[in-house]
Length: 114
Image 1 (cartoon, one colour):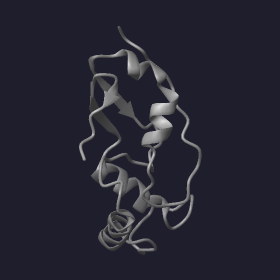
Image 2 (cartoon, rainbow, N blue to C red):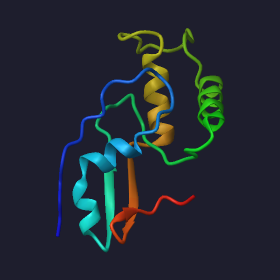
Image 3 (cartoon, helix red, strand yellow):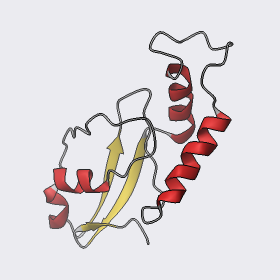
Image 4 (cartoon, helix red, strand yellow):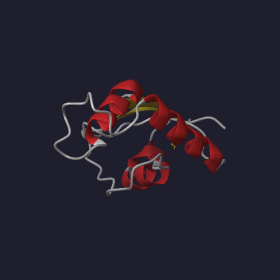
C-alpha cells in the first residue's frame, strides 16, 4: 500500500525545530503499516530537514550556533541577497543538511531511535 500526501509545516522562526509530532499527526495511516519507509521531502529551497536529538534542547541550540558560525550571514561576497542577508546562508545550510529523509516504519510507528 502506498500513501502520498502534502503536509504543511507552518512558518517557524529561523532555527532547529522539532516537527515529528506534526508529521505523525498528519499521517495517521502510519499506524496501519507493519513495515515500511516514510520518505519526507521538503520543497522549500531555504529550509532543510534532519534527524537529531529531541530530548535535550541544548543540542538544537548547539546546531544553530555551529551552522551560524560555519555559514555566517551578512558576508559581502554573497550576491544572492534579494530576501535579506540570511537568504544565501539559508540556501547553503539546506544544501549541507539536505532536503529529504527516509525513516523506517515498524509496527505502526516511526523507528527514530532513542
